[in-house]
Length: 184
Image (cartoon, rainbow, N blue to C red; front, side, top):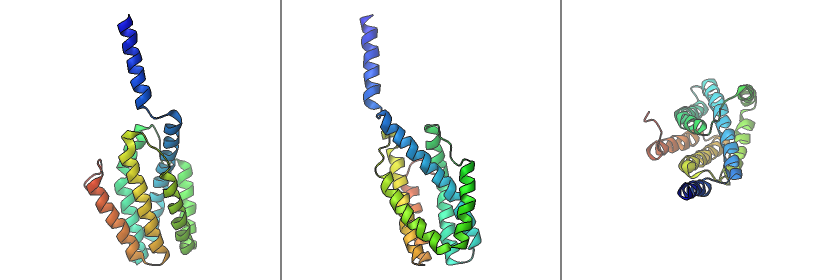
């Protein structure tokens, strides 16, 4: 009997000390949900903008961004399933439609808004502590947000070639360095 109680206490203590605190996990899950929704939103918006600006340097930038979103989606889904989260609810579809209309009507203002918001968002993500099992993924999330912020700053200055290049270089490096990414 004593051996069983001791074993149970030992197992319980290892779980308590190895699991992140409940608040930390809740903060991470909330941040991951927001990131999943952002990725679902961005995928819809940038694909539409790539099509809208096809054949222009701006279209090439949006196309590179669309490629990034499409290629990384499997990795995000893997983490959403791990935490029992769902991305891209109906609200995201509505927000995407509004964003596309805004981007087409006010392209410079749209890019300026994204440049500022993405930099602020990346800084907020850096304050989140993920579970140890998600640390590599979370580092990737932060790095891709920084790459997007840099790309938006180039786009804001109408340097769409550098904006595209920033995303292409990031994607190429990420594919080589991040586990769980498909080869093509």
